[in-house]
Length: 404
Image (cartoon, rainbow, N blue to C red; front, side):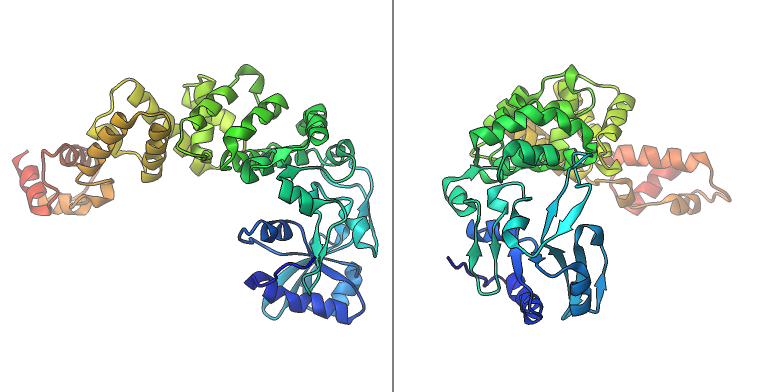
């Protein structure tokens, strides 16, 4: 079978394959790019596998970086682009449940595909578009089936992160998990404790954002994958998330901001210090932590009906947008419209938009030096402008200052 290689990424990379072949070696496109082109999806990046050993690739491409050379990977520069090229290999045991203790380079493509995770990711294509499928990946794509390559217990024993990847692919693609594959996931799920929380978090966020999250989350719960996170034994939030997503029109996933906010809300953790401590354990970025804290604060104000034009003023637009999405999902349209009305009536969205600054205040009041009073005056001006008690115009603000 032949597939189209019309995509610009393939077209730019074909000369790399041909150059390797011109030296007597085999070279193929492998992995997710093949899966995605067969699914008629856009391609994010290109992976190349070859029968040439790393030292041979170094000879073929003088401009290269030995990134991951111990596992057979070389990054080469060719015709102005960089390409990651990996030698066919077999792998030994995985004592850390993530990476092989030892790899052996081989010349055989089929042997190389035996180490892949799922059949849909184990296909290869040569420079002419010929498809090489040793494990029924093409048929599994047609059947919308996620099936491990070879013996599932072996694949997940080798790399426990593949368990989360399987659930993530199901959420992104809408595929069902083959029964033997899913049973192996459940049996070995506890091995995720050996994987860094950061790698698990990345997979979870991708799963939560998947368009088929609703039909996938029951598998996530059944496999008890939520217990891979600190304090997971103290809450059961998955049903709540399932209910939440089921409220959407059609199929949609959840953003990381909503995901982590609802997780903490489900745990009933309202103290910001504790919230931040847990989020650090989950390896969230400082920016995302700030947004989650803000989201939970706004959510509390909404639940208490204490939000006003002053309270919504301080929130970043992304937090407001995500809150509006959450309110849509949970059918709180009246509240959403109320917040939108308050936002639309705000004369400014941040202090930097005030028509006056500290230096101008000092000039207007003929002050020789500043001090805390400048900040206090800016606070008062900001509050009055927000409430509509003072026009955000320099002259009007100076007139108000002189009347004080």
